[in-house]
Structure formats: structure tokens, C-alpha cells
Length: 136
Image 1 (cartoon, rainbow, N blue to C red):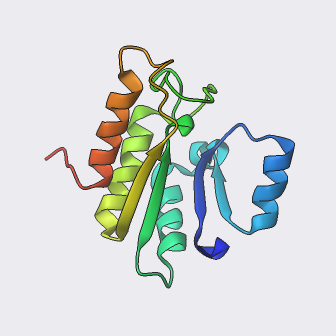
Image 2 (cartoon, one colour):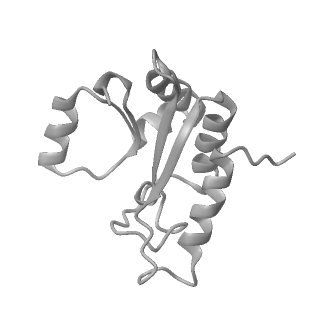
């Protein structure tokens, strides 16, 4: 992995040490403010371009902590102000549309604190979008 090909999308609650490490690493990060101001489409266009520039394809690590806890309550770090249901789906639909996806993983689903398996079900929905499931 080369830092110039890494994009983090949806940052909103970052501690001082993590902030320092992200800045120092050279990865590109898009905060929730970026998404609010530019829109998910613009952010994901750039993130996909960065991740795929000069590579064989991209890997997506879907961290459910990025999703607002009103949608995904069963995560390790639930912080208000995360991605909406539709923003997360759009991001993953765009990844699928890019035809650059080589691999995908999903992290931070905690069934012990989940509510009626909502977060796990949501994770499956998001993964399906990333793998190409379409509305029509």
C-alpha cells in the first residue's frame, strides 16, 4: 500500500494522535465537512481516482463506525454525525460502477451491542451495493 493511493472517506471524530498520524502519513482524507460541502458524489469521484491511480484496482475497507449510529447502532465507536444510509450506499454504488474493485472488507460490526441485528443487516446491504447490486 502506498499512501498516495489511500483515501479515507467520512472522518468526523479523530483524536489528537490519530489526527497527527493521518496528516503525517500522506493519505488523503475527506471529513464529514467535505461531504457536507462538496457532496458524496464529488468526494467519491476523487477518492476512487486517488485509490485507482496507477494501480491494478482498489480495496475498500468499509468501517461501519463511519455510518451515523441512528442507522448503525452496533459499532465500536458510535459518534453522531456520520454517513447517512443513502450516502453510504451511493459511495459503494460508485465503487461498483468504477469497475475497479478488487477486494472489500467490512469492520466494526459488534453483535453484542447491536439492536436486533440492524448493523449486521446494514453491512450486508452495503456490501451488496459495493459488489454491484442495483436498484434497477
